[in-house]
Structures are given as structure tokens and as C-alpha cells.
Length: 387
Image 1 (cartoon, rainbow, N blue to C red):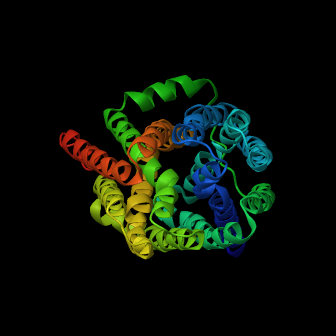
Image 2 (cartoon, helix red, strand yellow):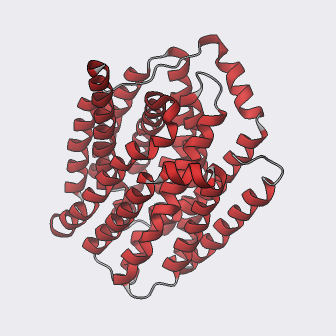
């Protein structure tokens, strides 16, 4: 019994460690990419195109890699290959200064990194078994990594330039790769039953309505993820304050992840999801009216319910509706539509709105769009039982 308990403790420690390192690496470059592109002298539409590539590749990458993992049961090798590729091409972004050179590098980086989150989430859910409501307590370590790294990277960029953030990213990802060699990776391949399982998954009326909503929400989420720092810069914020803003959002995330099981059990997955979407609408609207940059961290408190609440509920809903052995594919579809198709469209539209109207109106229009998405999911799901 003691040995079994020790093994369980060790596997969860490794999963928490990977979350910590991976999201710390992610925070080292992703929030600052739009600023980096603007620093290179690129235009609004060019920034929109480059920031649209990573979520667009989610559509191809996350679902395709997840499907291959399910069919072949080679989850560990696929995860290792994707991490190696993302280290190489992520660092190479810092070596390109022209739009034409950046396009293929950013595309390859996005393709390789796209399966990491779906495979990680599926492994956590499999390790938890019937305790899937405890997912947030593993995922919160990713929020810790993000929150600790963000202000440090902001200060490093302020003093030493963007190139150092890419070097730190590579070091953290190498640490994640070493952890991935030992952490439990779920092997849930279904072989020849894959096509049948995918059809069953997509024939479910509830999952189709849920995935369409995630696509809509992803468009607005991209405006925060990609253009928030450009907006804060436009009203006078420095990069240290930007990093601090992310940290406050992370603390809010951690609180929601800690209590996510209680929230899901008390209110139900659907209600928690709708609450998270409404929080995102309020977050976008509040940032659009912000005039004093030092108040940005206060608004970012909304990021906890807006992302952590919505993500915890979304992962649980996708997992509930996945046929046996289709866990990685279900999580891949969720990532592809929320962070992929939705994120890509949001990045492209945001780039043009940023160039034509500025960040203030862009964020305000995003708030209206997200509010409409919440109303759609609430009204369209009235005929469904509580998730």
C-alpha cells in the first residue's frame, strides 16, 4: 500500500513539475511576441498574421498529433518530438527580423508545440481516473510557472532586450523535456476503432454545441492573449508592469484552479463555463475603458474565472463526452477550436482592428462578441440536461 501511494505521489509530482516548467517557458515569449513584432517595425496586419499562425496551427497540430497518438499509442515519443521541435523553432524566432522569414519559423514552432497541452491534459485526466474534478489542482502549477516567469521576463526584456527571453524559454523547455522522459504519459490508443470513435464524438449534440461555443469564445480570448500588452503600452505601461499584470492574473487563476472541483460539483460544468465566458466579456470591456495603467493588475483579477474557470469546465465537458480511448482527441479538438480556429480568427481580425481603430475599440468590440457567445450557449442549451 505504501509503495503504491509513493508511486502515485511521484507521478503527480512529475505532472505538476512539467506544468510548472512548460507554462513558465510559454510565459517567456508568448505574451511578448506582439511587442517583439512591433519592435521589429512590423505593421498591424503583419502582426495579426504572425500571431494568427500559432492558433491556426493548433487546428492542424493539436487534433492531428492527438489523433496519431490515439491510433498508435506512441504518446511519449510524440510528446518528446514535439518538445524538441518547439525548442528549436521557438528560439529561431529571435534570429529572424523580417516578416517573410518569420512566417515559416513561427509556423513550424506552432506545429511542434501544438500537441503538448492536449497530451498533457489527457495524461493528467487518465492519472486522476474517477477523480477528474481534481484536474485544477494539477493544472494550477502551470499557472504558478506562468505567474512567476512573467514579471521576471518583463524585467529582463526591459533591461536586456527580447533575445534573452527566447534563451530563457529554451532552457525551461529543456527542463520540461527531461521531466517528460519520466512522467506518466497516457497510452489510450484505440487502433482501428478510431474513426468510429471520432464519429460518435462529433455526433453528440451537446459536444457540438459546446465546441462551437469554444470557437466563438476563442476569438475574444485571443484579443487578451495577444494584444493586451500593446494596449497597455499605448496608455503608458512599462514591461515590468505588464509582467506584474500577468502575475496577478495567475494568482487569480490559482485560486480558481484550487477550488475548481468544488465549483464544478456545486454549480455544474455548464454554469461554470458560462460564468467564465461572462467574466471574459467583463475583462475585455474593463481593459477597453482603462486610462490609468497601474489599475491593469486590478482588472486582471478577472482572468481567474475567465480562463481557469472556463478551462476547467471545458476540459471536464470534453472528457465526459469522449468515447473510450478518445481522450487525447477530445482534448485536441477543444484546444483546436478554442485556441486554434477561434484564436487564429481573433488574431487576424484583431490585427486589422488594431491598425484601423486602435486597441481600445478592438477590445470593446471583443467584449460585445463574448457576451453574445455566452448568451448563445445559455439559450441554445436550455433543451439539454445539466452538464
